[in-house]
Amino acid sequence: MKHFLLFLDFEADYLTKREPHRAAHLAHLKKGEADGLVVLAGACADGDPMIGVSFCQADTKNQVEAFAAQDPYVTGGVAKGFRVREWTTVVGKDSIMKL
Image (cartoon, rainbow, N blue to C red; front, side, top):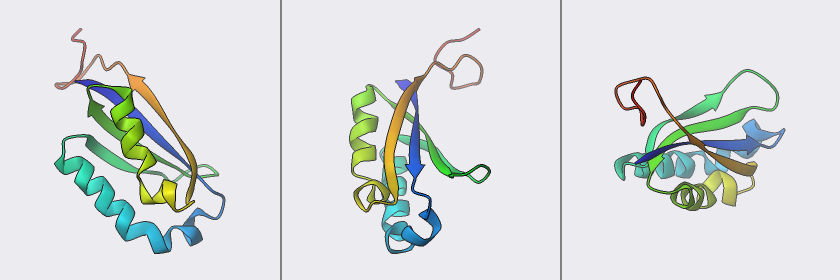
């Protein structure tokens, strides 16, 4: 398995726009967690605009991108887009590379 960081780029009025989609978004993340894709998820509360970040593990970047494309925050326009970056972890019990 590889590690990935998934970034959701929120619209400026994120806090208002998220309300109708929040329960479905959280259910989507919980399903991703149950499937072993999402390890951790949350938002960076500092900075403007806010961003959502998820630490994911998958075989391919495409799997994470497909998951993100189905997120209710993405399909509902709460996020103006997403980015997925492969993360080469080197320290920690679950790191990909061991130093």
